[in-house]
Image (cartoon, rainbow, N blue to C red; front, side, top):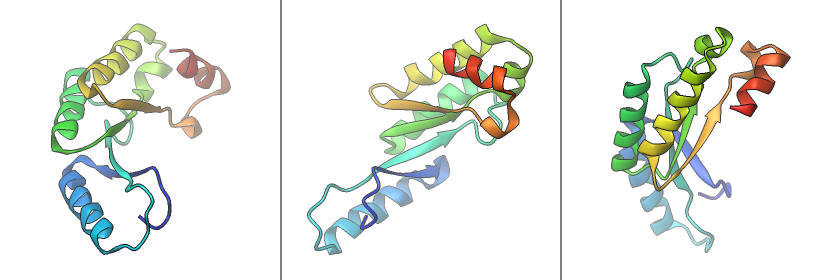
Length: 122
């Protein structure tokens, strides 16, 4: 809370704990700034989860209190040039996370320059 972060990103199994800790921190802090929100990561670490499972994970994360979702792009499908699959995977998470935002982690260290460009286009 005192680090001025916009969000605190946790695995889905820790959302409720993170929400509780942030509320407690706000109660004891003398700072007047806004409390960070909880963000959850889905499809971690390589995004290789089935799209329906990834979307369901995002839905459950929002229900548990996450106010933002960080999803991992399906690195294997991107490398295989299955761009429609990748796009649909992202769209499924975006729909499941509504009304909250979704960021897509592209795992740039695993991608070529061409793959990075394509991931950003999608």
